[in-house]
Length: 341
Image (tube, rainbow, N blue to C red):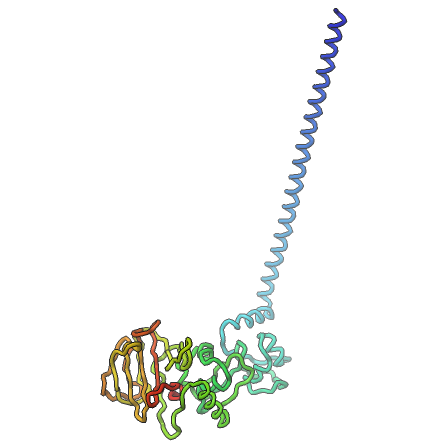
């Protein structure tokens, strides 16, 4: 009996020892795993901090580089030249020692031949130190207006959008160009001037495009645009139909002036035109001024070129304030730009 008790006690002691050892081993493993996980997290955190530090250094170097670029006159000049593409203007450049047309063109991201054409130079011309050059900041040529030339004729002859020329040069009165006035002709490498030969070509182009006949050579009837504003639509096909005049956008109340001398043949409301004035100039020639907000002259009244006859509005079929200006020859609408200068 005693031996049996001793055996049971011994077995219980051995079992307790085994359980204790197992618990100790389990705790050690857990602690080891915990230490391993913590070490891994710490290692990853250290790596991230190192990467962030490297990024900060790179950013600082980049900022320093940018500051140096700004202070570098060569870089600044190139950046400024590139920025000028956004808005057209005339660049005046004084030639420095060692300059060539190619080097100047490269600085401003332009074509050397355009700079040469703008200054009446040959492509292989040698530049002199102190020589002053003028050229546009965009792709195109700087052109000086010659006697008798009109913007419309130049646009037609050189196949340039008329409105684009007006927009680029910010022309408020494209019909009133001055002799030797400098304008930018966008998108071309050379500009064809108006000559007797090109005049015939322009006439043919006008006829083929159905833009109306030109005024007789033996008459002195040459008018002016009735409103100072932006031309938003030309004579000719528009939206699948014929637009029989030109539209000049301007604020409501802007003065509308008689294009030429004549007698008012109509002053009142006309469907589509809204408030309309028609002036008879003789020889079958009439001018129309539509969409007015106010009419200031009456039928039968004699007016001179430049007389204040109405004010800009948006009456009738109109999408905004503007003057719709027409010229009619024997009842047929013709291109107004053949009758204004």
